[in-house]
Each structure stands twice: as structure tokens, then as C-alpha cells.
Image (cartoon, rainbow, N blue to C red):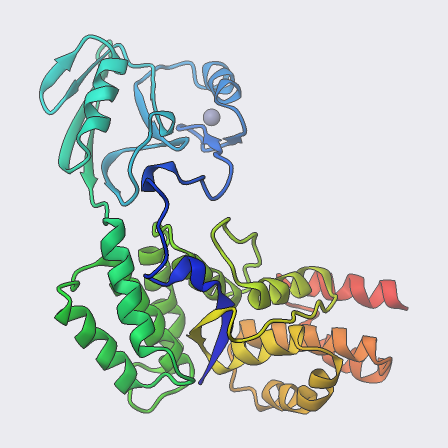
Length: 364
Ligand SMILES: [Zn+2]
């Protein structure tokens, strides 16, 4: 079990000054406005409104958060801002049974008290919509306390079932059980142990992706560098190579992602002192190191990667990544015969296959 060097301690440790207000963080990505009827995506609210008026003339009220229509019950992990909340085609509205003159007045009331469960009722002529908002916003101090537990245990080169047990004990001792962030980290660490076939974990290997999925759900709404970097690592695991959020400070992992996007190695020079770390599974660690630690390192470990690919004990996602980076490597060292060989292992992959084929063509 090993660690990736990728988190800037300035963003992940508990001992760092926090932003003045957690309400002022930049959004991770530009807001998309989804048509609430057909889910077509628009960059501007006005464009979405035009489309909806033309394509779906029947009106009903909608309540949108960050461009997405809410229905029935919504659990909120992040505070609402005035910009994030929009009422569409709402003639009148109630909040917790109280009627408001305008949606602006209602919005003000709603934003002023973001705790517990609040019921919104929106009306457009005979049409009414009810949305229950359940506020579950974790205070910044609690998020930091979870990370302090995390780093107090995962500061060495090891992850074992025993470490995980100690993490849960520490979470409990600090009164943080039930905390979504702690739960998400726990799911992630369990998934890593399962993926590495730890004999101490009762879950079978096949279930590691399920556990990653659970962790992704829990960590998706946590605005912390550690949570966002772990999310990136989990997406890497299922071959989703997206843009990292603005909080992520994970140069090695980001560079490995870009290698799988571009077919070029980009080495990352960093020392363990300037970046703090979190545990990852053996194959992810191997892939990230291979993509980022330089030519001579690649020469040293290339056989290990070939072996992992041949042994056929890795997930389909990982075997595609292994074949892809090996192909990039063999091209770089002009071993075209071997490049051709590993290409066969990736060419039918739905994500990396096309890219691999393009690379083969361009280098010929
Ligand atoms: Zn539509």
C-alpha cells in the first residue's frame, strides 16, 4: 500500500487559516442551466428560458438550485447563496406554510435560516409544486476535525484494516460519527483495501467499485481539497478523466490524468515535504508514478506494469490504463513491436481505445 504525494497541506491540514467565510467560495465549475423538462443544458439562464417557452409551452412552477430543478426532497450540504436560487414561473409561494408577496421576499427568508427542514410550495395557476429542503451543512470546524483524525492516522506509508479501525475510533472519540465527510473517507479507505485484496476485509474484490461509488456520493458535496482530490482519484479508477475542481492540489494525479488524455508523459517534480498525502491502491499508485516520475524511473518499473497487465488480476479499467501508458512508453523508446502488442489490449476500450488508435496513427 502506498501514498500519493498530492495534497497541498496548506489546503488540507487543520492548522491553516480558513477562508473568512465558507459562503464565499468559488463554484467548482461554471453553472449549467438544465431545462427542467428535458434536461437539455444551457450556459445562460435566458437561453434555457427561451428554449423552455418554445419547446414546452405548458407552464408549471420550478425551483432551481445551481441551475438544476428540485423536486420533492433535496438534501443540501452546501449553503445556498442568492445567486444559486431561482424561481421559475412562480405566481405565488409559501415557505413553511407562510405566504410571501414576492419570491424575493421568500428567498430572503429562506437564505436567512438554512437549518433543519423547510417546505417550499410554489403555485402557477392550478399547478402546485412542493419541495422539502433538508439542510445538512457541516460546519467548517467539523470538516477540519475530520481531517485532523485522518492525518493523525494516515501519515505513514501504510493503510491496513487496523489503520482503518483506528480512524473510526478516532472519529468516534471526537464525536464525529454520523459525519458525512468521515463516512466518505471511511468508504474510500475500505474500497482501497478491497481493491488491494486485503485479507482482513470481508468484502469480495468485485465490490470495490461499489464502495468507491458510495464514497463518491458522500464526498461530492464536500468543499475541501482532500475530498476533491480523492474524488479525482476515484474517477481515475473508473476511467473518467475530467477536469479537477479548483480546490484540488494534486499535481501527480493531475499529470497522470493529462497523460491519459493526451498520450504524453509530463513529469512532476515535487518533494514529500511540500505535499501531504492520502492512501491509494497499488495499481493507481503504480500508474501515477509511471506517468510522472521520469524516464529512468519508467525504465525501472516497466516490467512490473507489463506483469500486472499479463496477470489479469486487475480491473478492466486498470488494464486499459496499463496498456495505454505502456503503449505511450514503448512509442517514446521506439519499441514499435511492443507498442503494437500492448495496443491490442486497449484498442477496444470504450474510453481509451479511440485515443490509443489515434496515437498509433499519428506516430506511424
Ligand atoms: Zn427542454
